[in-house]
Image 1 (cartoon, rainbow, N blue to C red):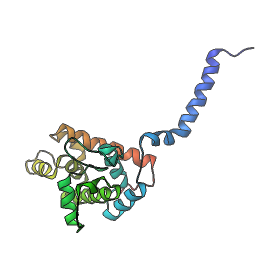
Image 2 (image 1 turned 135 degrees about the vertical axis):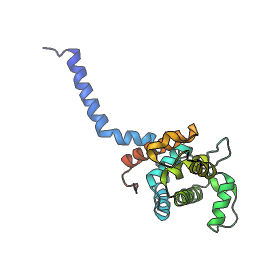
Image 3 (image 1 turned 180 degrees about the horizontal axis):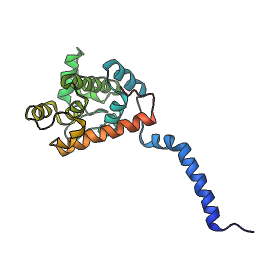
Image 4 (image 1 turned 180 degrees about the vertical axis):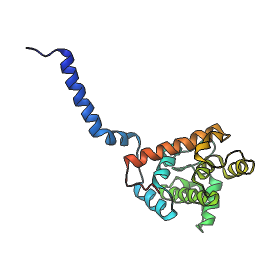
Length: 188
């Protein structure tokens, strides 16, 4: 007796479902890449920031393209503005900063991760730091002073810039994805 087409398709479906369950992480890792993993982890650890958060920022900012340039002039993996890069390198006592340094992955990561840690220390709040990374410290400070948004994760909808609101939410979701796909990234 021949099997009906629906029985054959059901068996094929079960096999495909099993393969997807078994191989979903490797498949997702094709899209959610993690280049420069060792550097991200080392700089994150030394600056006290979450490596999964850093990975989410890099994915959002440049899709791990070290040569990325924004229409506003931000450069490299973590999309650092040259003026911000220059200020940070002065804080780090690095000599001879050039905006070309922002295209060098190691330097961009060192600068960008230090800056994220600085924002986190400055605002003493991770969500304010993420908003500041996108919108700038002046805007976030003004929101705090005017009582527009206090950095509460639950009240993210109060962020007055739609782009920044989406940015913060996107980073939080991507951070969970990166931690799930790469469990060795710290979730501190």
